Image (cartoon, rainbow over all chains, first blue to last red; front, top):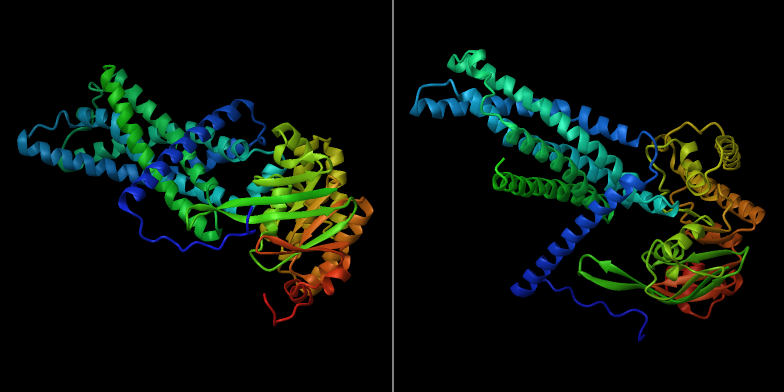
Length: 272
Length: 251
């Protein structure tokens, strides 16, 4: 065994670029593996766990009710900006605004509602989840759970996962409706587009609704998994909590963009 | 009995990106019913040792055994059964923020033994009386003082009357009076229950008088294992300096 404790090696500050690249690649692979593992364990405990009653409802309130005002305000303004900008651009080519509402509805249902809503939720809900779980890690509450045969995934991740799955879809649907309404008002006030002309769902088909709902559901699953993964990996006091929170927002946002790409591509390939 | 045989534990050093030995070649034995005080300077590996004993950290080398059960080799179910026999008070108290004092204390009981509500209420009341916090059952941890949190953590660790009691800095940050009261309580409670207790504390003046044996851990190595009287006259200058609290010396 040699000497009980080795003499500390000097800290290597400058790695060769290839070594650094290799390290980053290995870290990325192990990170993805850890995320997949957490997701599978979450699914397992969703059906087999013994978490406390009411935990999911509490998280649903936190994710849904508490996020709704922030998300509603954001989506309302985004709705106004988008309709205004689209109409301005359209007016330069053909001064006919009759299809602005129809195109906006399709874009909102398929892409903007879920993705902007998902990104907003990732910042608010993701940061909260990561900070909460990371605090529990650094204050040894997670160790205390494990010592009482309570799996942290069952107790901390599953309630957030289930609540997020439901409430993300609900909040995104409601806030997309609000974005449509503020868009309609903007079209009326700024471009004299009557409401009965603007409200036109002729371009929204089953494929748009299915794609939008699938995205919302996928974001609802990705946000708690990414955030809790960062939170549970935290170490080192309040600085560790801060790092976990930042990492959770970055990872959740990145996951939303990547998932968006794959769902959009899949929908295109299957003709939706 | 708690037995450690040539224990080695490595943890990831995030700054350097590799795994470093935090404990190496640590051997000690805590006989049944004994209060063993583990002391040492900061970052010596004391908390790591406690977490390894209860199976929260992986045993890299050597053996950790609680009675006849090898913690490092125990299957998940065996580890779960073993944890029913362990009570632990953590350095940071680890009280669950969203649970009341009563629910915090009852948590291990409910999780590990599924008792009736009446039994839970009765045992929680008995523990609250014992730590002189009667009437605090509906308070939240955020509304408690440091000393009260420590006492709730001790009550939670002992509610199942575990044969093995692990205490990590049970009186850290407390004033001398509260600290003395807590150590007196530990001594009384452990003697009454006959538990085997492994306690880490920096408050030597209060810990050593209640200990049957003491170990001195420095830089991941156990430099001394013996009685308190032997420790006070230890031949190793580092042990002598630390136990006697001398400012000058090799440490």
